[in-house]
Length: 295
Image 1 (cartoon, rainbow, N blue to C red):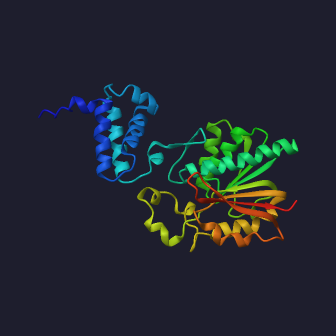
Image 2: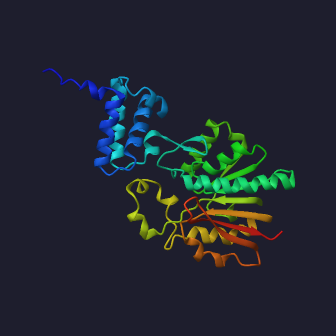
């Protein structure tokens, strides 16, 4: 029995992309064309822009099979980063899997806020500054800062051994292994030493809201998402413990859910904190919390 021949049009990059984008759109996947491009580029082992420049080329059978398999995963709702195994973050290519949260643009904004503070401290002090990345996950925040500030002393902690393994692998791939000290810990109290800056992207989604999240997000580790009854369990503990882990004049930066500041502002009372405020993201939402200790 003779096998049916593949339509020549669907063997080219252009044909495969059009067919895949249509299927993704039919299944309610946002940014269908962009997702299709990343999936095909990954199957070919080339960059997305390289693919677009050569979209008329015929795609080898092996790459088409990989593409089809990964397209099926995307239709099921699996995050693109998990399928292709990496995510761009602050110009770094980070390896990710189901054991870590996919780094997001909002967290890149958190990094930029910390960078502004580090630049001021560099100019004012002229000496090494220490930073703690609490809940490091894939190592995104710690490694982005290590790449920009070679003199920065960084400790990155996480409760998940799997996440720490991935973070260490990312550090090695980026040539930053000697720049970050990774530790397993579930609270600031379990981390030795004091730091000039603490940065954190903790879980902040209320438990009851997890079931209503987008399908893609529900594939991500619950440990990195579930913030307890009102979403603030971990954040409250961070704010409470931070003064003991910060140097005089130390700073705390936390990424939160939009609008959560109103329930947290009262925790920054005068005995420990000299000031605090909510900081907005690029869309104008109160996304980040900033606190500074006396000193």
